[in-house]
Length: 396
Image 1 (cartoon, rainbow, N blue to C red):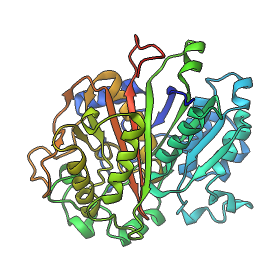
Image 2: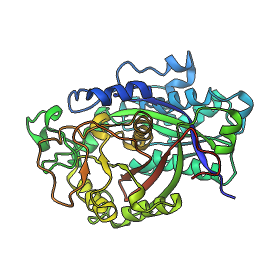
Image 3: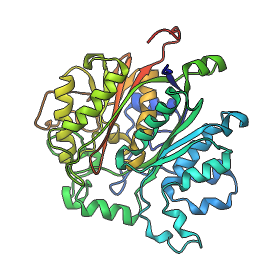
């Protein structure tokens, strides 16, 4: 029998905050992180603050360091005997910082996608199943979905899941700039992104890169109730698909993105009208926003609130799903839906009349959909259900 799966720990490092309280405060006050030199960095992060002295840190790219910091913090909430049998599932992207090639003798480890997982399992004493996914911008959300499926099937009692990424190196920025995917001087001239970066607007110039990480502890509802631990939310459903269309551009009508969402809704046992808010992929690129808007209109109409959390933290590439999921836990807990940066007062892109959040909204959200769509047509969607303190194990 399939088990219900809940989130009982969250650790996050982002430009908008590293606790749910900080994130909610930023949302409530409209405190958007400043965009500096067309990126949104995380200030004052050092992995050694989480690990102490550790010789293996030099083998981790900055993105992997974010993943490792969050995963280690989440793992430490479990006793050693429970960590030993836990699983670890991370989303990872390529390290495009070529300055690290000669930094150490085993420089290859800086480029292996599973280096963060190796570091965490060794440091935390995790010996259960481990997997690292590289499905582009869907990677960390898909890693969380894989962990959810493992726990739901009874294969693992505990699973740590999330990811970390940073593409703010010269090599990373150049690759996106060459694709003309960035809000940059090449696409937007001298326009200030702090005033003009607005996903889902008619004037979209590309995305703003960010960095950070997040990791979650997943376990069955039965296990959480037995341990009497805090429950942040329930994962009610997940769905995946692939466009099979283009190496970088999404299928223009969002046809296969809709399939991923439909699968997630079906697993959650929800009609489209059961979703109160959608954390959209919302990159601010011309092609993604247009395809996603069409898909959202076809599935939901104008009913649910539409968020673009990348307008707050930047695009975190393979880590975007994990960090956005953490921000969504703040939304569910504190009932504050953050606006899409700069969308108020701007002309919307052509398409269906969606219910974009343009100023902070207070609303008791019960079901929230998170969706990510990556290069290569990788589509993933996850349904979060707000945890009600009075809900018993038989309620869904």
